[in-house]
Amino acid sequence: MKNLFFILIIASALFGSNITVFKVEGMHCPLCTMAVKKAVKNLDGIEKVSAKLNTKEVTVIYDDSVKIEDILEAIKTTSYEGVELSTKKYEK
Image (tube, rainbow, N blue to C red):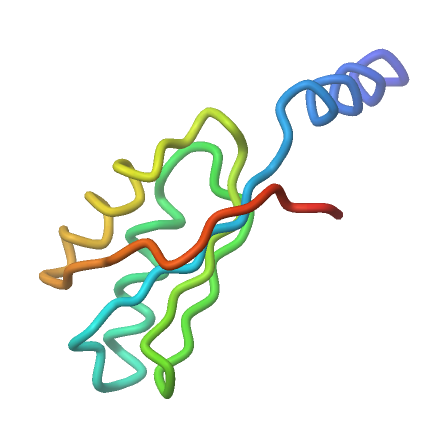
C-alpha cells in the first residue's frame, strides 16, 4: 500500500495538472451545464469540471495526458462550441 502511495505522489509530480477556462456560448439552463460537465468528465485524466451558467464558462482541471482538443471535442458532443479563454499550470 505504501508503494502505491509513493507511486501516485511521484506520478503527480511528473505529470502536473493544468487548468483551462472555456467559453461555451449557448448554455441556457442547468441541464446544459450538466451535459457539458458530464461529457468532459468522461475523458480520462480529468480531475475536476465546473460550469457557470451566468458567465457561460467551463473550468477544467486535468493532467498532462489530456489535450485541449480532446476537451473541445467532448464539449462539441453536447452540440455546443467551446473556445479556450486561458490555460495555466494548476497549483494544488
